[in-house]
Length: 228
Image 1 (spheres, rainbow, N blue to C red):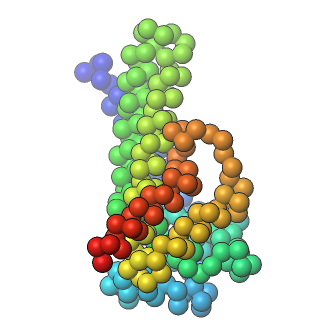
Image 2 (image 1 turned 180 degrees about the horizontal axis):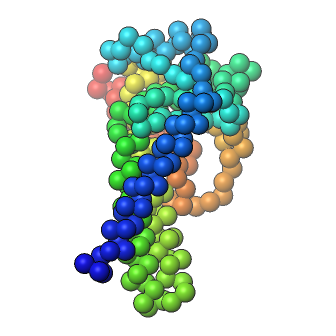
Image 3 (image 1 turned 45 degrees about the vertical axis):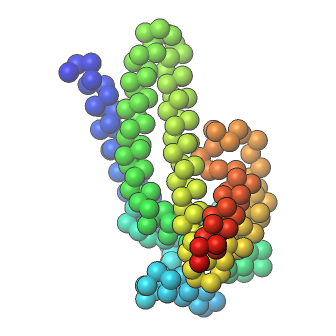
């Protein structure tokens, strides 16, 4: 029992930190968000809602400048004010923003926001277990190696979630009549719009590289269009 106590504590710590992070994020979103009221975008949302047999899809605007979309554990969808500003400037289209919303709907439908609680707790347990083992053989650097392995696992799981949400979005965009073209064109713009030109190796990143995402979207698009 004593040998497993640090691992159990790590799991409990992971659960607590995840819950705290969710609470802090949702508090910020509640205080800094308004419901989307752009008429053109509300009209563009209707085909997505119809494809999902919903009366409407509610989207909130998070009043921050960075370009992003996100979904919370309670199923709410957000796009940032920075994204909307780019839309109003003509840098992105309504259809491209729909692909962002479809992607976030994918995270909700596939349970990614809830699964992260389990992932986060498991990663903490793995980190602690590895640190305990490696510290016996590699004093001083065992903890660093354990942290590195846990971080690589977290990045891999995150990339898998992104590919799954992309696939969901492609299917939804095709069913809605938009097709996958807006999703692909947005990815081609995003690095320039966000200033993200990371030279980090793909296996260390929490999101797949743009060319990998586009290739996966095209493969799904080809497969699904052949079955329609």
